[in-house]
Length: 255
Length: 271
Image (cartoon, rainbow over all chains, first blue to last red; front, side, top):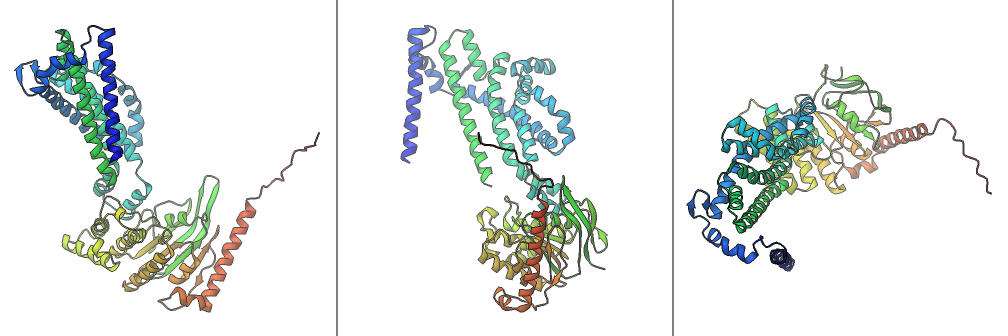
């Protein structure tokens, strides 16, 4: 308990230090960078009335974050919907994995900025293109971790399946899937992190309402304090998502 | 003709020859134990006997038919329990019962599960997962799972190897009881590193060096107890013969390990 309080206080000190550096930079180094106080004053309206809609691109930060979250949720689900089965297949089949491993290794490091134009060509609309980009960028950790999970099923469990003469379906549902699930969830967690990273890029380029879209618009309108507001929001939401997935993951590990 | 037989079984891993010309015949309803020191190829032998591993030479036959995968109406108990950790004790046993008796309805299957969990004294812990059970209790679940499929052939791979001495003795007694209750009795092939355990449980004991020793019958009446066996002349004799064979095999093996060419040491002269 005491240690927990101590850790909390230490993290507050860390935050205070960073804000201090920020204030110092804005005062002495870059006049364009809004100071922490100025940022707060100009963002107050958006933070204190988070669900207020004043115009298409002028909405409370809560609404903006929600639009982004919904978009991420769709793209992420699409990604794991393809990623998890693909990982299972690649893990189960040596042949398929040898066939597709080089392809995956090449596709994996491609930036969302490169995928988005392709999505726009394919779907001709910004929303499906954004979802495509999120899905295609975020699915790889799920594919790779699931594949790894299938390959590292302990020999004991494989023997149990053989000794009990389980049907292929039971083998899948009672042995393979539960044994792979913790690995899969690690993949999901990493995928969600990437999906949240990608959202900003895709909203910036498509100009859709959301945290990323708002950020880009405010940059163009020279309201720099709102850029900082968006950055902080993105960080806090991303952190929360990761923690939530971490909790689910920990639950699965015990089981 | 023997009910369960291993004929001319050989297996090598790379250059290391683990088994060579292993022949074993087990009659229906007989309990045979193979005793070997660690590294003697016991585990390889039972994996081949169960169809989990293919031999390089020779074959395994059950009721005259070659065994190529784990046979139906057979069960196996492993040293490390091999329960699925995400299923409760009950669900672990149920998985086996469902697979062995697909023609039964749900109630019949569940009754069978409950019956065998109660026989091993785990009625109250049926809902617990393996992680919540002690080693002894886990192995009880594994034993219940094995007997619940009413197997004709039972393969035991050092079933008590991971347990403390006291739990080991209790579970040995329970195994004797369970086998006695079966009708007809299952044919049992057990692997063990304990000569005492072999004499306690089996009708015949075989020692495994690089080859199998001639089988030594144990004719003492069941149920046997560790205490009584200490003073029983036959038990002492069986133990002596098996131990002698194992020791001889051990000596032969270490002789094999001697380098073929004599080593020539460098001439080192002090300056």
